Image 1 (tube, rainbow, N blue to C red):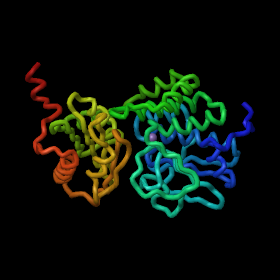
Image 2: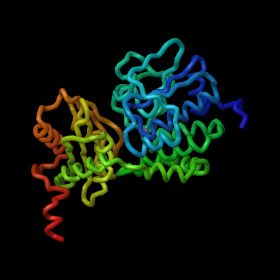
Image 3: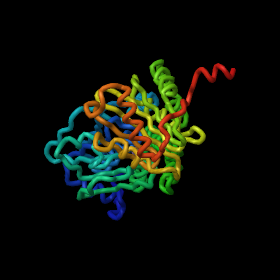
Image 4: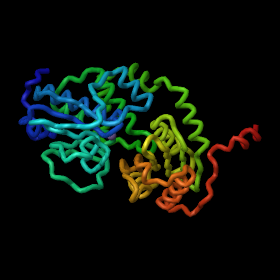
Length: 353
Ligand SMILES: [Mn+2]
């Protein structure tokens, strides 16, 4: 395809390129601890800018990439993402936020006075609406990857198998747990990407090797889970990897009769938490924000959300922290029951053998 093909200004991708065109370079910023959706949509955006504007473009994010599958994805597909601690924007560089919004607080621009010129996202937005030149935020779309892939399709750009596989994997990971809804755009893009992606690599990513530490975190998580009516709570006194929080939450929401899940652990200087809800059983983003209220930040999607409380804001002992979290979670869920039932009571399993 000729990369100089004239582009309709009326398309979203055409308007985005119009906004970025006067700049000398672009800096694409994902949310911290970039997940497959952040990585793939940022990568696709970098390709769009490179192909259509030809100016230098960097893709950056804070934190780390922790899930075994996501690390395997990076290893196999080599997306051009750089993990950095601080961001600096010099001269005529356009900052673009992808898979997060300005008010989210979990990205490298949050602690700076810098404003992006464009935001592309699909999270529910609760903060103030900032006036910026380009904004494409569609919470009904399952993945930012679907939005950015639609830009590539609008622009009739070639997508190589690596990028297509990353985008496809991104959509699959965003439609887990209770968040299985696919918009019309997601379905169209899934078909478009499936014709270009490599199914073998996709399967390899989804079956990534898992460390012994992962299994020990998993056992501890299952043993630390209690059920209160239809609400589950898993508090890990310690975890070797942050990825266990989201993974256990995705697993527990599949438990028959469980409609709301909170999974939390202290990792480094923060208490991190994941919330899941079944379809039609409450807003996960709202529950996450109510649980961390006045102590930290939370947000996300209707059925998948997360939050963070700085450890300095929490009670000192692990037991006190667990009590506080349980009270907040059960209040948010409006569950009166104070004593939970263990998910796994080893003695009972053995007795019933
Ligand atoms: Mn996303």
